[in-house]
Amino acid sequence: MSTQDQERVLSLITSTNKPYSLQQLQDFLAVHGLKKAAITKAVDALIEAGKVRAKDFGKTKIFIPDQSRLPILSKEELDAKATSNNALKQRLAQAREQAKVAEAEREALRQCLTLEQIQEQISHLQAQSQDLEEEVARLKGMQGTENPADREKISKEFVSKMEVWRKHRGIFRSIWSTMYESMEGKESDLFEEIGVDTDESVGADAKKLDNLFSTVRVSLNKEAKKRRL
Image (tube, rainbow, N blue to C red; front, side, top):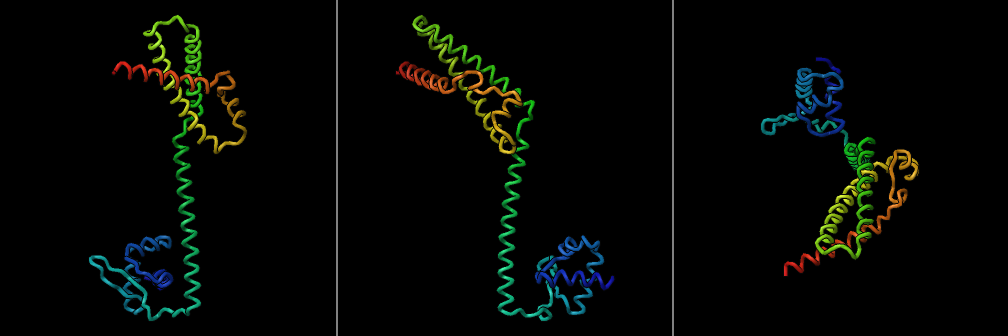
């Protein structure tokens, strides 16, 4: 056991003026290469010299500095330490908040799709959009000629496809929104670069489709209620 070991143990205990278990001392002093056996010998020597006191708490023994050997702080010094502690607490709270934000961003990025997966989603949505446009054109062409049964069947197919399209469209927008926050450049330029066709670029009127979807769904619900009466 060296005098340096004792000095390091004593410095840790007195500088913080708080109790430590043997395991805690080992954890904090591991950076100096101190092992459990060396720390135990150093603590025993410090206790024998009256520089450190030991107290038993159940099965755990803790070590505290001899308070009579510590300097008594003036009111000004105590106030200064209190101010310093408050500042450190604020910095700690800020660091924890920043860590929380960073972790949330990391998790969001982890869940983001790859560029290849996004392009697959885009192709899928484009195909669905084309199907819906064709469905709308077919409905317009059959106005006044379809019978009620055909009209209901077509309406249900339209509503079903619209629900799927709206769901996937929402998923894409949510994923893209998260990714776009960490990208540079205009959204339109990025869309063009990765091959995203927007509603405007393909001439699709999403608002009209949504309005038609709402109208058809309301109509189907009314017909269903009539049949139940």
